[in-house]
Amino acid sequence: FDLGGGSLECLTFRDRKIQQAVSLPLGCVRLAERFAADPHGAFSAAKAAAIALHTREIFNRSSFAFSLPAGSTAVGTGGTLTTVRTITAARAGRNLDATSTHLSVAELRALLVELGALPLSGREKIPGLPPARADVFPTALATVIALAEIGGLTAFQNSLYNLRWGVVAQALE
Image 1 (cartoon, rainbow, N blue to C red):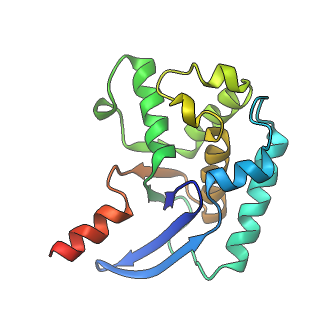
Image 2 (image 1 turned 180 degrees about the vertical axis):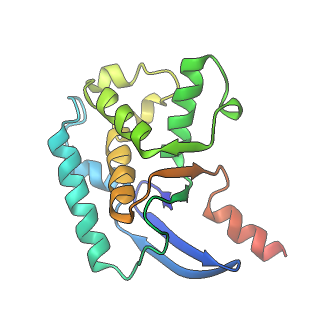
Image 3 (image 1 turned 30 degrees about the vertical axis):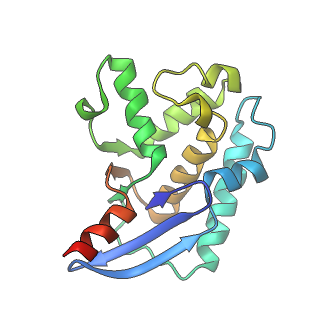
């Protein structure tokens, strides 16, 4: 899964071949504009719930079928999960490479509760969270958490190699 500003890219593979490739209109900027139009205040549980409901509706209307068994870990790329790791690294006084690439959904929920309680001005001061993304970051976390709930996932394995990198690697073969 690769969450961007305008869309969520969903892919499944089997034997190194793409089985499904779906792009859904669930990008964090798009959803923030719809569900968190005023980014200056706190990000409420009601906003997260509205994003979760909308995300479920979009998945239900899509052709994407989760193929991992419940309780699985999926690969996640993009800025949201990398930012979670960067925040974790900053809090531990380390750099990104020294953090675990395994991120539990419980960790994501806890971070959303913590950061969601802050106004934008507070989120902009969080070490590891780029101030320019502090407005949409709670929406992005809520979307990734909703994705995990829909798919029965318990964690994400963060990869710094996004989908474009894979396309380039395949083309160069």
